Image (cartoon, rainbow, N blue to C red; front, side):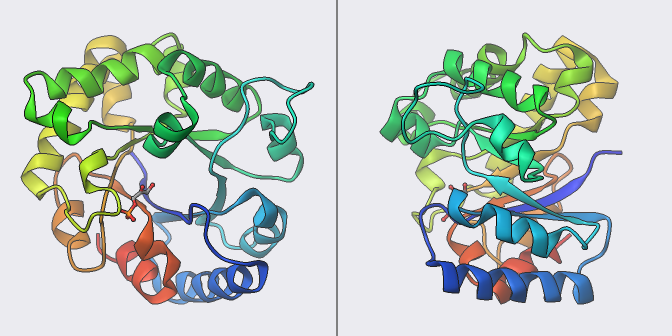
Length: 253
Ligand code: 13P
């Protein structure tokens, strides 16, 4: 059975004080209100990861995610953070290939394949993001285009390794725009990606892969999205910055 996951991506938001308040509110609400068969992940800026990890550790269905890591283990890469460093402070997840990283920092499918490798070598669960722009959606072949992001960054993995990856489909046109993909649009892509995974790794691996939806997901639209057969949760941006709304999304299954 694949996992239900709701992950927050705080992006570059919150001072230390604000981050601690938000995280402790989320932790308390998750303990009291969220079913233990839903995993709730907080994707915070690097600065607060260590503190948040200590906060979250006692809650069995919670984890902390970094929003990126470098593809090398160590070396002269000023300003970067490595997967072994994340491992050394007990972090469980790393968001890789977010469209903002692809767009503003030029991350390529090839580079992301290396990041996925080093994350897995260090016991981190990659939350691998994929998705198309509006122009790409309006052209033919948008399903295949998103599937090719998986092929190029993930399909070198063994079935066992692939089984440790979480996929997040985030249509770029829906991120931060208030325009959510309809549940039919999201379900179409999720089902296509699951078939694509099945063709490579078989039905069992595909059935066990959690595929999250991201892009203007909020407490109002989450129930309909999460009710779709192939949508296993969400990667939440703006709505993860408000504890009540974020936890309500985690209660939407
Ligand atoms: P929004 O939920 O703000 O649209 O952001 C989605 C996202 O990019 C999560 O990674």
